[in-house]
Length: 374
Image (cartoon, rainbow, N blue to C red; front, side, top):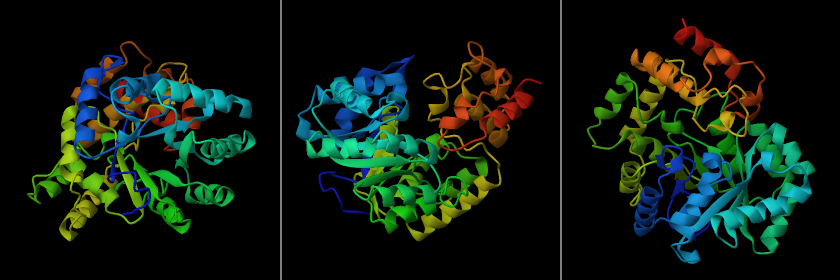
C-alpha cells in the first residue's frame, strides 16, 4: 500500500454516495452516528460529489461532519462534474457553491469527476484542470486528482497531458480486475507507470460482492474465518501496492461497524483467501450478470426522460438469474408501479452516454422487458 499523503490516517475512506436514507431524505441522525464512529476509530477521509443523492450528500456532510468537528479532524474530497459547467467561467462559481454547501473554506482533494475519452475533451476545452491547479495555488484545494471510468489508454493520455495530477481514483475490485471492459488491472498499471497514488472506488461493486451466489458463498464459508463477504472484497483492493485509500459507500451503521472491524488494524489477504477469491471470481464469470454498480448516474440529471429506474431493474434481473428468485417478478412490479417499465425505453441513449461501465443499457432493457413483461 502507498504511504503518500500522511495526513490520510488510514487506508480506508467513507464514500458518501450511498448514505442511510429515510425515504428520499438522508437519515441525518444515523449519518451523524456513523460519522462519529468513523472518526472515533481513527479514520478521517470523506468523499462526496455534487450530484450524489440528487445534491443531498454535500448538504448532509455539512450537518453531520463539518458543522460538528474542527477542520483539522477530517479530510474532505469533492469533485467537478461535467453537467455543472458549460464554460471555463462557470467553474469557479460552481466550486464556491460546493464549498458553501459543504461548509468548508477548502477541499483537501478535488477530483475531475468520472473522466473518460468523451468528457475529457470538455474538461480540456474549459481549462478545468488548469483552473483546479490555480485554486490549489490559492489554497482552496490541497491536492488535485481525477476519478476515472474508461480504458487504460485514455488514462495514459490524461496523465501524460496533466502530469501535475496528484492522485487517481479508479474502479477496482476482484470481479473487475481482469474484466475486458472495465480494465481494472490495466488502469491500475497506468497509475503505477505514472507513479500516482490510487484511491479505490466500488471495491464491492455496488454491493454485488456482498450477496453472493450459493456456490460462491460456500467458498468463503469454507474458510471458516467468521468474516463478511465485504471484508474479502475491500481487503483485496487494500492489499495491492500503490493503493492509498479504499472507499466504501456505507449506508447503515452495521456496514460501518463491519468495515471498521477489519480495516482498523488492516491485515493483507492470506494465500488461502486469495485462492478463495479466485474461485469466487470464476463462479461469477459463468453467470453472465449485468455488471451494473447502481451508481445511478444514468437516472440523475434527467438522463432518462421516461423515468425508468434502470439500476433497480438490472438488480431484479441479476437476482433472478443468480438465485432463480421468482419473487423478483413481484419486486419488478413494485419498482415500476410509479415509474417507467423497461419496455418504456425510447432508446434516446442519454443513459449510455453517462454510464461509467459503458453498458449497452438500451439492449439490456429489452432483455429485462422480455423477462419480466411476458
